[in-house]
Length: 168
Image (cartoon, rainbow, N blue to C red; front, side, top):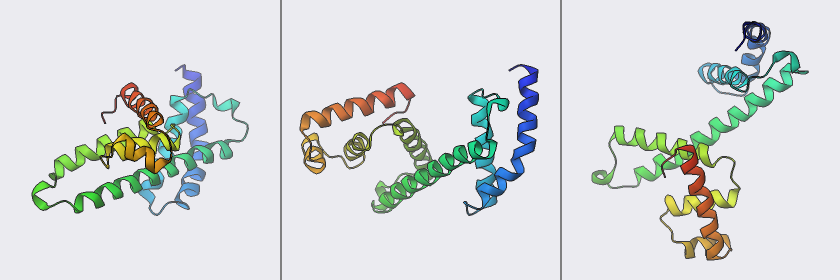
């Protein structure tokens, strides 16, 4: 990144970081999450190679990115909580170790990120198959679609996982 863009980003950060942090903190329960979200917001701007001079409404732009990140954080936490609740239903001798649980949660987050942009029905079919162990016929019945459609949904979801490097 050229030095002039780095300087622009530095000024943009210093001009808006305090406001963004306060804005995000009002929506989140703790400062650490707010700091992480504010930092990730600026990281996304850097990764997207956005020229700060092209941003006409910086606060609206930053709050939109932050709102998406907050939504993602809540979605990941709900997913993680649902998974942990399922683990608690397992008999103790079948429950994974803390290390295995950590690795499984990392994989679950990677799969969640890879499926994020897919249609809801595709995600539902994939999760019913992978997490609930349902067959295509039962998934088709629950989603009120054909078995062939479930097959297409699974192909799309598995392809997305493969392309993103997530292992279902």
